[in-house]
Image (cartoon, rainbow over all chains, first blue to last red; front, side):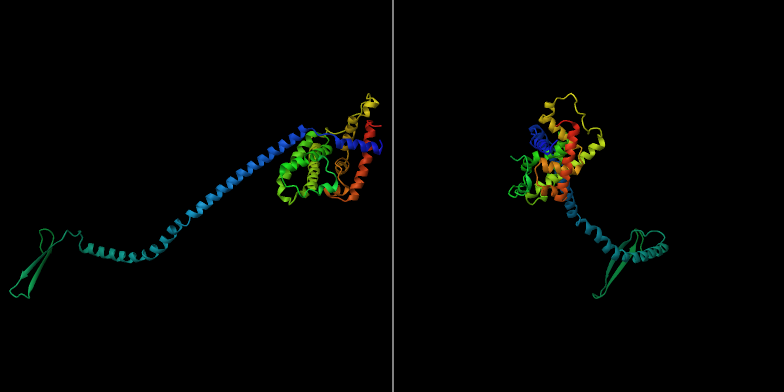
Length: 137
Length: 182
């Protein structure tokens, strides 16, 4: 085989026509694959957008509950709680002492005030009577 | 006609073309498919390769500031994809390649037929080493300049010339052994 014959054979290969059907097949496959890629990107974008919206929503609603969680424990618990503690102990002690003095719970007390008017207009006697029903002290 | 992308000049005259993917497919589908066909030896594998090439083009469309770089790039990708397809095919279908035994009963006229000649050279091309085959396909069939072929293959012009010279010698021997040409 000569160089010229080889050249001719290679030229014939270059000139060999590619069928339109083969080209159309490639085009269709490329477009289908690109379409699939686009669809995948659309889904990814939609998912990313949804995540973003969710994140924004969480961020916006976040600050409102935060003070509710943070403030109450620091202020009332620290300042108010210790104050009642001491009186409560004293009250308890006083109550115990009172209960020792008066074992029974105090009955309902009725107060009766009697005003005595004397001849002297500057002197008025008030007589206060305390006692349970039917009892006078 | 836009079938053949001849030489460096034409590869560098694409500045004015917009980077429209459909237009690029129309522009390069024949050269890409033909290159893949000659590199791989059959049209079905060539279609797979061409599909992959255009998908990569679509994926990388943004990297081209102008269409001028698409020509060399698309040939380079075509050659690389063909290497991959060829290696896969070799791995999974090792018996698919090889010379057909010459038909002893074939007449001289038949042996000289253009169709036979093309088949013989196609089979001979398939026997060449990858780099030599790529050089011959790009330079001798696609008609690119030695400079462009060197750029596409990532080598020097001298190497390309040497590869083509060696490949031509092998092709002649292969075809003579096939007995399909005088």
